[in-house]
Image 1 (cartoon, rainbow, N blue to C red):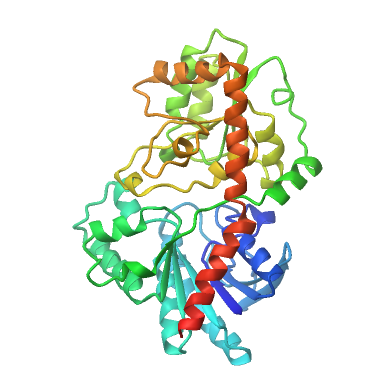
Image 2 (tube, rainbow, N blue to C red):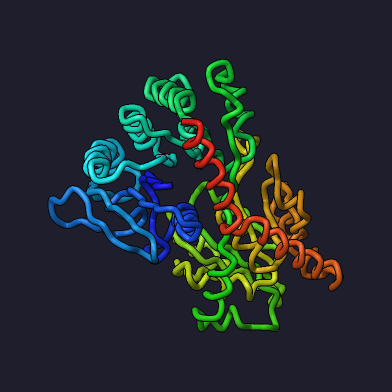
Length: 414
């Protein structure tokens, strides 16, 4: 198959990496398929823009995968410049796809949201040129906007976005949700009368175990706190924003203040980092903020942990399940996992990877950490084995086969 992947935020691993489609491309190519990724020239959460002139697009081989970067506006944060970026990119992507269509028609277009606008234009392009389109949903927009930003569902803009979302689900040839409760979400919206639930698929995020092992050996980091075998290391890796709710982990650290055998290490960056770091320093807590690190160092960091932490703010949409990227890297590190938020379709609970629990306060969170500190060696090692075995289930090599089957199904049906 000749496959076009259209995703606003398909960032190559070497640039920070929202890497789901990179790995699918990598393994689909190994299966003999041709893959081209269309994405924004503005690399999200960085100062990088791949196009500095007025060119419509720029083709690059990044990490062995063919990317077509489409010119898009620079922006910082979530202000108006980003909104303009989201509105403008679909038009330019259409122009770029039209040029490549004249050279060679794709067999299928595989587009991913957010953002809804790129998915909408990809779907319209497919319908115009009689190309089947598979739409993937990685985040429930605009539902997540409503939940996390406290915007009314009756807001006219939100209502328009809901109608756009509904149309996309209705017209897509196949749907893929990264969260397991995709069908439930559609039913809750009352859209099951117009959206065929038989075309709804579920493919989680995952981890490339082969790359994980290679990076562990090749990219090591000199960090005395990480290499200190005399402490029990609790590690969090990821964004430090309001949605990550890391204040609760800091609250737990207050109760661990006098126990110098436990060290909490936080790798990442975000809008809440400065405030939380100042709070920890002012109170002399056993918490150190290590800043953002390149993805290639993550295997080494996680593998030197004793307990890996997922921290998330509660939201109603958690009832549809979650597919956090970090969860699968945590699995690959073969270490237990502690999560502060039970969700429906909970992989941690299902596969006995650790503890997932909503903590009433910092003391309860502290007690959960201490349970792992004081755990019987046999029980602790069983958690480690469970994580590793579960990581094999969600190896991108295996997930790519699921994607291949879905794409082939829609091509053959046309």
